[in-house]
Length: 266
Image (cartoon, rainbow, N blue to C red; front, side, top):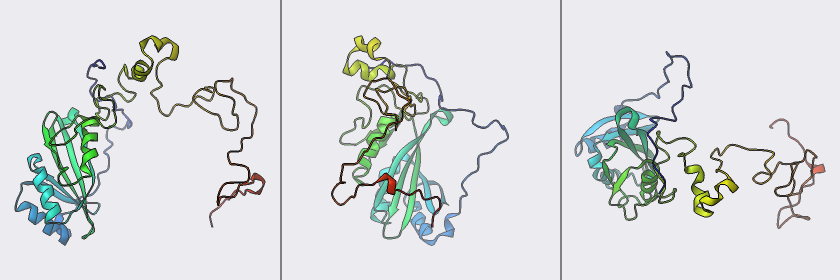
């Protein structure tokens, strides 16, 4: 098991704006009555469940419900209102702000050509019922939500991590999770594959996925300056032909002398 680390609150939060009077623009919200189809859909839901809030945003109906009603609400939407496809299901971390996760279900009705988003709030340790019995697409979505956020799902047939190793500590999409991973995440694969005795030989894992070192010929190839694996970098320009001589089936080999640079679109 990886050792735990101290809570760092929101380590991803950065002061991108220096103007303390800056107010981020909000997406406009429209009343539900402006759309006849959504008005009828909302009336059906209100007759059966407690609807905390509802509005239209960017042409989609957004409905806030009690999390205890999530399965029954989605069953009604699928069977009675014909929202037959769950295209997205995940969470938003508001733990630092309110101690809650915001859960959303993005639904599509192919017959009505309408999109609807169901939302609810749950506490950090609160258990959410699985909706995999209604939408099979919720299978991996619920596993990913558990893996990345730590949202506990009951009734899922195989509730295990989806992306991270089973013994990984914490949940990478929480705002309290460091951007470059846990303090010992840099040694995780080294320890697992080679053993701790190889730490001094291999060195820590590079956690910055955007970092490129043109002088590192073990991990990168400098285009037009290619050298053998691990050799010293060279400033001499090289020419590398990446296509088979004579071309491949159907595809004709490109001759660089015949290539043209298009400077404007027609």
